[in-house]
Image 1 (tube, rainbow, N blue to C red):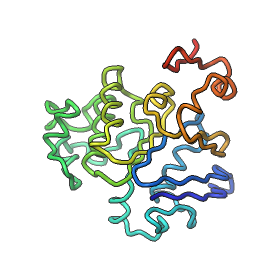
Image 2 (cartoon, helix red, strand yellow; image 1 turned 30 degrees about the vertical axis):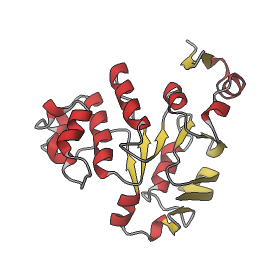
Image 3 (spheres, rainbow, N blue to C red; image 1 turned 45 degrees about the vertical axis):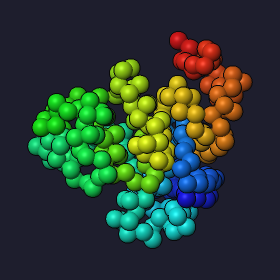
Image 4 (cartoon, rainbow, N blue to C red; image 1 turned 60 degrees about the vertical axis):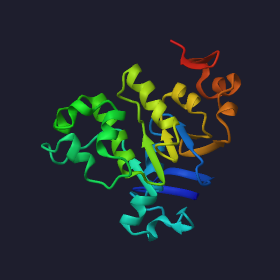
Length: 235
């Protein structure tokens, strides 16, 4: 469904990404990992057409630039790490109602435990509640492929577990790309992993091959350790 052959991508003559190559078939998921500034979010914006890839990215055998915006939004959707509201007086219900949806908005609000906020202004929500609202917007859009950029970054442990259960469940969203710094989340999602460092990507076809003690030591040194089935920062 998604094919990427990106020899190089520059912004203001600075090379941000190079040698990125991958292919996702129907219903295959992916996790993207990498340090700050490695190029993860830039790649996400290229994948969904927010940045021009110069015919390096195809979705359903069509270059992403060739798709009309409406068609593109049905095929691939990018969920940013932070909610940006242009209308400070739009409430939660009306925000979700901006898009067509296969689920009733009430069901989505109940699933995300946001029912009591449906008449609240989006701008008045806490950062964690706004993060869940972004997840709700993905459920509303229900694109064939959804890209999440740091979907759990502002969530407390209880909400993180709840978001994980939704992300892991194929009932809600069939195909996902998850960008995250949360190694425990990446490990438990158990998707293939694209690890980006200095703009270059290395694809691990299974999470198990990435999360070996030797590979973690090579990439993170002594800052990350495996403790049974868990991956934790070694403080």
